[in-house]
Image (cartoon, rainbow over all chains, first blue to last red):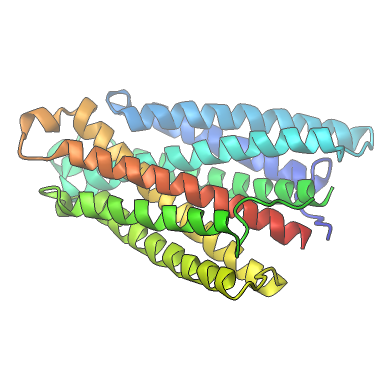
Length: 154
Length: 154
């Protein structure tokens, strides 16, 4: 069974990759602009993980663009295996980063009320950055599933 | 391409499922025995998610045992689809729970030094429970990949 959406070297694949890199970059930008993020390991890890995700997705977006430009098919078994491993590693790291940051944000907002006690903490920016990270993960999860499916049916 | 390890209705599949339910139950037991866990949303979510995981894996372990007992093959497309969806949902929830709790634990141990400031918090139990949750996730991730591969090649 062949899937058509999100394959490497198609317009939908290119759009998925561009979406991933844009949301990852937006997540980093918002987190970096928030005061005091660097005191918390989870938020630093979010930036590192989103940085890796943005680089990986941007690289694959360039490859998709090139494949569309020269009208070449990217579906060799070796390439798809490489994409699958990279996609799964970055997807797992992105989910881990988004969830650990979300855990800390929920703690700050609800459990220990840090956000009210220390108004200089820009909690709303943390939340927006984490939301972008979850959207990035959703997009990379779609790519990963499509790639794994392609590998299994190559 | 067929995979042999971890298929439903085999001894390795049964062992994987039993491992998942045992580690999930151990994670819950250790967390429940730690003082003050209920004040933190992430730790409560860990218990809920590990509870779901333990139930799901125990159910499938019983099914595997039954299939081994009556020597029946469980590889129909409908059953495998059902296993894939359940495995992926519980695996994602388990990773999310383990990571959000790990984010909070790292915050307590390293970033804000809660564990030293409030010695009544049983941080070592939090850490052990989270470690068990990560082992559970590792085992369910193996099952999920095997199931997805089976579905793609059914």
